[in-house]
Amino acid sequence: MEMKTLQSDMIAAMKAHDKERKEVISTLVQAVKKLAIDEGTRDDIKDELVDRAILKEQKSAKEQLESCPKDREDLLKEYQFKFDVISEYAPKMMSKDEIKAVLTEKFAEVIATKNKGQIMKAVMAELKGKADGKDISAVVAELCQ
Image 1 (cartoon, rainbow, N blue to C red):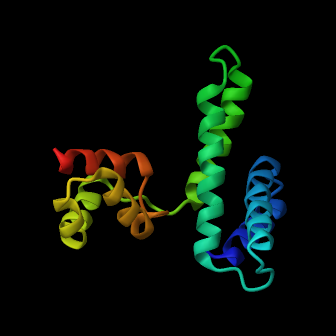
Image 2: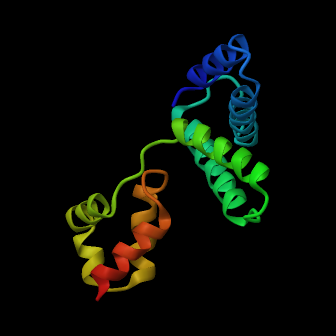
């Protein structure tokens, strides 16, 4: 995801007077800018950095949604909307089958050790931001049996 895309979508939401959508996209833009400043890049923001910020915001939105009391329908609706908008911009995650294919193809020697910690350390560098950590862990556990 490019920063320009986020900014242009935010402007489009402002022009359409879609206040809720604009606020969610604005939150994403702010999160990206904060992460960029924290990492010392202010002007040339890489797509990978934008994706990391979006995934972090998506995770916190999901946690909000899951921890919200079921009787608070107004909050549930708001959190669901926020999660849905963020999910539109989040990079597509790999499925368990795709993860398994990558692991058996690129990490066969490490998997042969059956040392889950060592495998996770080697694999996470390659798949971070491309696949959910829980899915990776499940596939690694399956391959270690």
